[in-house]
Length: 65
Image (tube, rainbow, N blue to C red):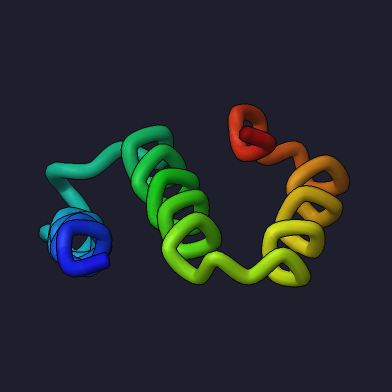
């Protein structure tokens, strides 16, 4: 879990860089990675199922793993 928290912190820091250095695609990838790791770290089946359902509706490709 500590490694997962460090990775979440890294993703947040990367997403908060000045907007000029991040493309929309980069921000979307960081967002997807963040939410996948958050769901995984929670070890919460209800949250996992909710994430899978909303990912399929919103088109979060690669989120369902």
